[in-house]
Length: 370
Ligand SMILES: C[S@@+](CC[C@H](N)C(=O)[O-])C[C@H]1O[C@@H](n2cnc3c(N)ncnc32)[C@H](O)[C@@H]1O
Image 1 (cartoon, rainbow, N blue to C red):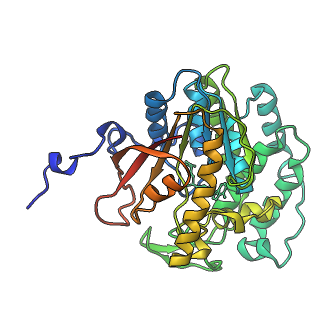
Image 2: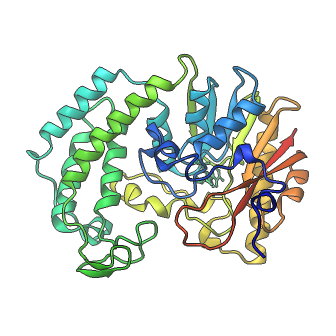
């Protein structure tokens, strides 16, 4: 029997559920939200709605799993100061670049100057390590040439994000496995995505140029919509241990899940090219740890550690809004152990765009209070 719209949406918070038509991709990836790909983010409009519902005007917001910075960016748009923390150095770099304030004239001059010099500088040859293996010789030389310029600029971090994005696009991968390619793809291959023979990329320069200008345009677009006075900061470290300061008026976060996404490995090219500090052993629910009973128990302990620390930074009674797909039903116990009380559970319908996984998909927004 066919399921009616009413049955499908029974118990669903419609204000937190969007169809593709309500919310097309260009809205979900507006301004700085698309500075660099990141697997496992939530959509800005969900954060925007939660902030409007639960956070008082001018309230300070905390996200202990900041990821690509969706909570921080939306907080700035909604006029809230915000603090984020993340254990992955590349995520912190990305969040810093998204949330910083810029003198647009200086930023644009630097980007145009770097692009002007790029093409005239020689890059060193790659060694036999990661760069030599994962990039065609010409692409590697171009990336290393651009990298050699970056340190000359005040806005070096913006150029680092451009370099990382170009490197991601220029890796020797197939078109259908951009998220977690296992081995470099050296020659032509049958492409399932395009239904024809495709070839891996051989150059990187065009990506650097395109992404540099796109990044500039996105930073300028965000500057037009962010609140004049709100500021955001990001701490790099383990949210079980960091001094989060406070007091905060709300937490808006989406935690990692046990054994699902490797948050360092997905940006491996950036760690290799930029020499970033890899602290993957501190990830809660690390993909490498798997989903055994012991790994799930360690995940729960890790989440309790983070949420206890977060509770200490929250104003009494302030909400912790946690977006999860808790199919193992771990969160009632996690929250209790962390000293948080579960007040409500909102269910939202998640619009799957790729169609790779069949069936309806839901997630919950847990509303807990200290
Ligand atoms: C689901 S993602 C958050 C995505 C974010 N909501 C967004 O929209 O981009 C979870 C994040 O938690 C981070 N993380 C995992 N363990 C951590 C820890 N112990 N301390 C701080 N961050 C951690 C991961 O690096 C990852 O970026």
